[in-house]
Length: 110
Length: 115
Image (tube, rainbow over all chains, first blue to last red; front, side):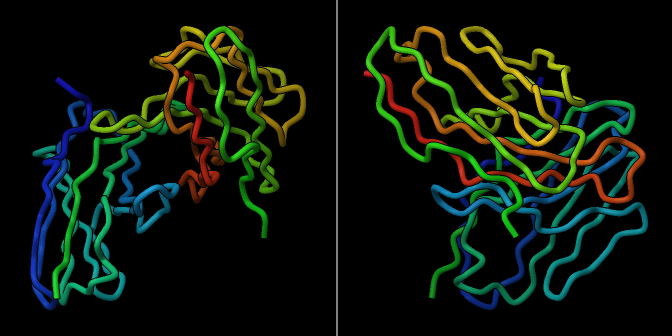
């Protein structure tokens, strides 16, 4: 079993839709959580960190459920420009290691 | 702001040739990483460094070597390239654990084809 698992998608949604991605992690020692965005043939870029109390940045909301060991990302009012692959990343604070999920691909259609 | 810079951006090698990929960061980060990304595989860690003069193996280190002689630079070497090393290579850097911001910053990637 992979340490970080994501549904690969693709999620194909119309503009304006709300879409949610989940990510599960297997190591309970994981302490830091992030969502990265990766556009085709580009480098991953930080979308947002995920805090224990949940956090919001504009149309994006991230939630963390430590008991169930999953992280979620909610995108409201989807834009065409949101089309990308979304990578879930976890890190144990005692470790160097950033563990990446394989990514969930989002396609937003007109 | 330069951030993380990788060179070269593209390269085609013949089987058996060697090459070095250079990664430079200007954020004074302690940690640096080399990943490879293949279709459907996500990012896999090749080698990493937790500080100047230190390196360690990641998930897929075979066929690669690294060096970190200066804090800002992390070099990835392929001694004898194989077609299985055709991939996109990303360098990243981050501050260490316990810091306020621990997210990783990535270079633009190197697309390597081994024929």
